[in-house]
Image (tube, rainbow, N blue to C red):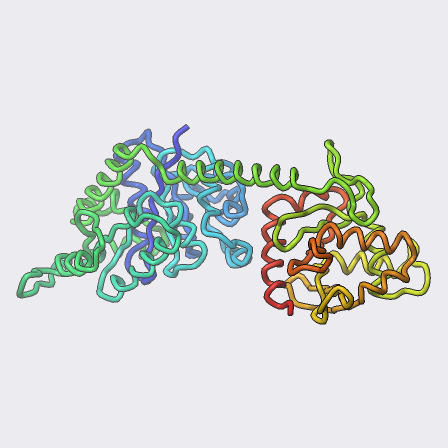
Amino acid sequence: MAHPYVVTISSEKGGVGKTTLATNLAIYLKALNEELPVTLLSFDNHFTVDRMFRIGRTQGRGDVADLMNGRAAEEIIEIGQYGVQFIPSSKNLHQIRDRIKNSDVLARVLAASALEGIVIIDTRPDLDVYTQNALFAADRVIVPVKDAPSLENCRNLYDFFDSQQLSRRPLRILPCLVDTRIRFDGPFKDTYQLLKGYAINRGYRCMEGFVAKSPKVESLSTNPEGKIYPVLTHGRGTDVHVQFTHLARQIYLEVIKEPERRLGQVQREEEQAVTCRSDAFVARRLRLESDCPLCGKQLVEAQGIINAGYYWETSDQALCGYLDDECFSEAVFRHFYRSKREIGTTDPLRELFRESAQRSYFVLRRGASTVNFHRQQLAFYRFDEEGLEVSCKIIDLKDLESSPGVAKQGLTALLARTLIEGDGLLGDRFLLIRRVGSDLPEEILYDDLHQPFLGAAVRIASQLP
């Protein structure tokens, strides 16, 4: 199944005719080929799309907010007037705005959908996260401009494409609401030629033609019934009708001539990313130490990871593995919190430690006062989720000599395997430790959790003395 060709209408300047352009272009494209699926959606909250295309008063099964939350487009699409499909607008987009962190969310949702033909996206008059998503997914971006200020705003759209390392090729300027009665002396005879000349001078490419200002067209959205009428049915006697016909033919020819789709590229990149993430997981899995360095208990087996409470990794990423939950808690209380009483496995103090560990990173590294073999210190840090220091405990390694046998051997074995170098001294690297879930300890090996883990390591490293 072919991916749809995505046309985004975008301008940071309001009042340039974006919605009029989006809605009428959908109708004209459908008129060119009745068999061509044309789907329209809008990130603006004026509900013009719904008012213009909805048949009857039935409530939709979803809206664009659901689409951005990952719901399949074919589940919420409606068949509207003139044969145009549309996804209902939403008044709740502001509620999910902060959850949308990337500009590729819409592209991935549309790439996974069953939509075909052409998708037209109407955007808000600002470069917010929804507009960015609409731009990222586009095969063609039409930027309506009506004056010098709206042309100047185009720079931000081009800068966005550059920041995403996308080709500028999809971007096209379209002079709109051009008053054809205005004439100039000199090389530019009218507003259209002037705007086109300014655009070309700035290195912008243009669509062929323009859309004129027309009182007749403007009146199609202002009437006692509150309806919005299309140019095709109620403005055939205007120049705008001819101009929209010409514009629709340009887009239609692009759809026919360009077999490659932006969404196909996005899907291939996503598949490659999934493969890379899978390979990275396997590579990390193979690097794991099989046993707990504190007690020697085997934690990593062929069929999975068992009884692991904490994941550890050296700051140079050379070594990694897991720690037994009870072993790590015992070592912390015995050596760094200097508990004089036995802390049982169900002791409230140990439960409190486990609970706080869910929101912490722990670090073992050489103490700042370490100078030679006879005076080595070990620092035990706790950092919060943002990588900010919460506490620090320091012990002399010689104090391990007075520890009970098992406790001494555990911490000594951990240091010997991870931090102590060939000369018997603690080296420059540190050990980063993070609590893992008992249901799926290997989850931290996946990119979604391992990349934040590495990011925390970088932030923590910048703070360590």
